[in-house]
Amino acid sequence: MEDTRNQLKTLKRQYELYSKNKTAFKNNLIALIDQVYPNANTFFSSPARKDGSQKWVDFVTHFSHVDCVRGLSERVFTERYQKWCKRNSYNFNADKAAFIYNHSKEPVPTMLKSQSAKLLITSAVSQLNAISQTVEAIRAEMLRLAETLPEFPVVMDMYGVGASLGPQIMAEIGDVRRFDRKQSLSAFAGVDPMPSQSGTYERQSNPSSKRGTPYLRKSLFIVMKVLLQTAPEYDVVYQFLNKKRSEGKPYYVYMNAGCNKFLRVYYGRVKEYLDDLDT
Image (cartoon, rainbow, N blue to C red; front, side, top):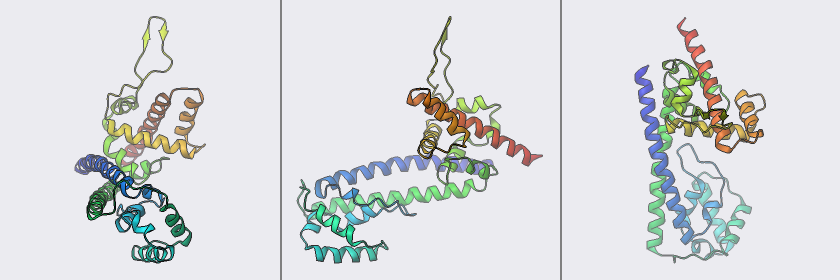
């Protein structure tokens, strides 16, 4: 069991590294697109596929310069766009084709259509696709390992925790029973409030200590954002988070307070479940 937890934590560290590099490669591709086909990365809002590939990335691979579109008649472009959709298993939409074609008349590229421009785009796409595949492969392996740990169903039952965030949080916390109390887990994450008192003065909103792992805090903050976006009124963590926000607390104060509450609930539920399994 301990070996599985160690593997999961190692995968999580690699996931963080590759995700950071993926963001850098994505930003690099967008910067290049701004020079040859401005705003082409905004044409599609489709989510990434399981292998990490994205529709807008596939699009600029084939139509790597704005002149690849506006240099054609609308009919010819629509035909080629339809073939591209079929070849890449995307749904064809004539209105989308018309939108892309009309939009492509407006931008003024700062880099002319050339072999060099195409090389830069295709190289950037290749790098992004490769690292995206790696990120998704690591994510899938993290989920597979997490499913073998006894606390998996309890963690996944917590609101805001899904197939991606669940294994990440489990990887950082490890066996929750290594913490003797809830406060220890909060301190480990660095979301426990720092004491701030001098004589008769006591600050009302204390900053978090940030003594613990930033990787866990990052995952917890994403969970808090999910709670704020979906607003599940029945969830105790959201109720606490929303209460602090409605009191006018600063952003980082109520977000850290929500993270603290989440970890307290996590500790109680997971420890009780594991203890019951041992009895």
